[in-house]
Image 1 (cartoon, rainbow, N blue to C red):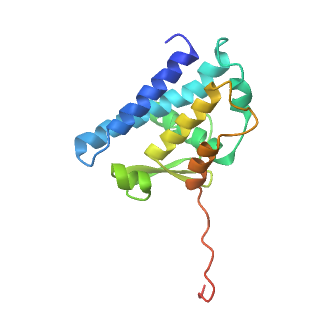
Image 2: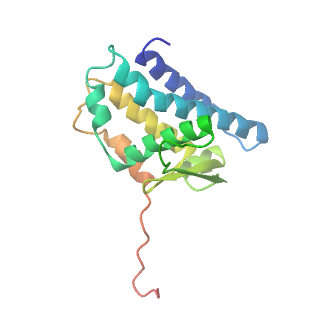
Image 3: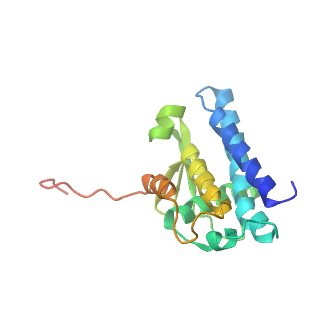
Length: 176
């Protein structure tokens, strides 16, 4: 790999490997673990290292990397925490804000593709596949110089909003 475009292509292949690893048997879940780790490490390094330090990057990419949305920030933070926590066993340079929870069936992704880890952070709760798809959609936008810097794609925001944790409001007539 010699530039950010090579790493972006690797990220696409990592997502394909993650999606192909669905299944509930032990071997499938092990493949899913490895594929998820590979995807998160690639996503983290694409955002933190390859795009900022590659002169041949897409023209608008640095402006897009600076744009903040709480859900996208939570997804990027999760990738950082998973990549660094797995690489260093204990993260010492900062305090991780992401919790990876046991496999379960808790959303559309897990109902379709089988039990996955839940990833909680920043007021969001992602399935591992959902998190990967959000990050892929984010990088698709970052690499698309024709897409506006000022507006996140509606499909990306819809994916992020699906993962937002909203406190339950008491129903009328219920006892607290």
